[in-house]
Length: 146
Image (tube, rainbow, N blue to C red):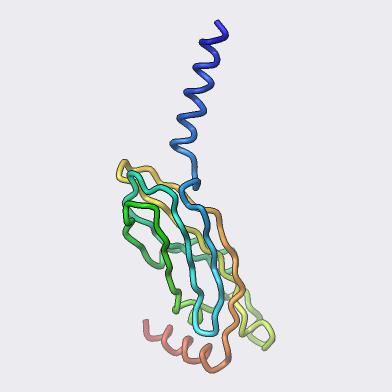
């Protein structure tokens, strides 16, 4: 009787490990540079994985897809440069306070889409992105014409 319960527990644990969230993404980082935000992540297993969708949230707003990367099919390293980040100014920033006007708080996550239709989200990474006033102004001008 005990063997039956151990077998059930083992199968349940094994199944959970196959479906487990972000165990195949071993690391995910976001770093601010003067011109952009650089996202990097590593995978340990890409079995059945179709693609990644990179999503961004500005100061807690809903996540929006900003790009996608095709899965390589083997454990790999990925890098995405978000150069549009400097053009996105959150409505929550006090436009009269210059100390907050040049800073934006971004949250990123990776959405993994599998061939079988399953979707798994990575942990979220947060980054403060400081933009100089010239780049901020140019970004705002470009955003008006999108």
